[in-house]
Length: 473
Image (cartoon, helix red, strand yellow):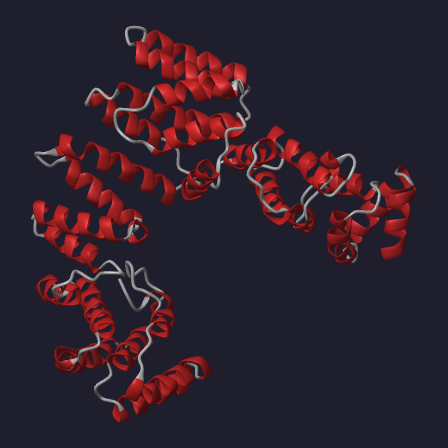
């Protein structure tokens, strides 16, 4: 949970990078001298010099816990666990006497994690409970280690209690392993039906941790269907279809055929048929119809993809108020890799009355392009980016990230034809995107294959590409 992952090079579950944590904590008064010495050492020393300086500092300030934690981390990085444990043990009495809440928490949480991975669950539990103290202060998620200990002892109710404690503190501290464990013990609990909403949210977090893995939406749909939440179940299915629609080069016509099957399976439920019609309208970009349906029909169990569908439809309908934009931007943690998210955002800005500066709009357009450069959404985003910079034929714009990718692919013995979009852009009038690309191109043509290709291609092009290639070769 807290201290060793970067240094040790092994997958210790959630150990916070100690260098960062301790620079966050501040003290005052007579502690200033120690902090100055500590921060100077941590910022200026490395390797053996860092270890020796911390050992000297520990002798000078034996009551300070942060020194001992960092020394232990270094010893673990050196694969000297016995010395690491020695310094952690030395800190026990100091921790009992310390009045510095943050230091005590970090010390006990680190020690708990160390003992957990050593397999000493009983002592790990003691240290974890000491870290939480009476106020349940838990920024790093020692509750997760405690929950895992309870699972190992088949105390699932206790594990659920501590998982929920961590969930309420900070969802971001959960690893995929924690999420799977939490989901599993909820699914087998006697009160499993009472946890449906929480289980759906956990699957949303699992999807977030593994955005390239498909199928979790269907898992959500199965859970929701079992408890009769038919609308929520359909929305979970839509979440899978949407990724399939945008990234598998399937036409809308093909997708709509699969949606027709959903009509047949849900013909007895008016609400289900209505929400299917809402998603059909969303795909067909009939934004006003989609927005009206999503506003009218809400899911029985909250599911984050419904918020995306409803808010995106509102933006595309020109209904983007400050609150709508704020709520939509909060969804970026779930959908930042879904190209439609960025596409709907910049269209919402264009159609709405809320003003954003050009730099923000440009960042949204660039992100939309880079997520899937060969899609229709990317082409439309290039045109809009061109409009933003008053560039005609914006569909020919190639971002510097793409230029780097194309050149790198060729140098790695890829097909030379991949460079064609760069050549097309070099035939345009002067613009900032060509300026951004020229330095990379100038370096790339030093490779004979690349240089020869650009020479041949420039001879087939207009005067602009001829002049640009001639100037750099």
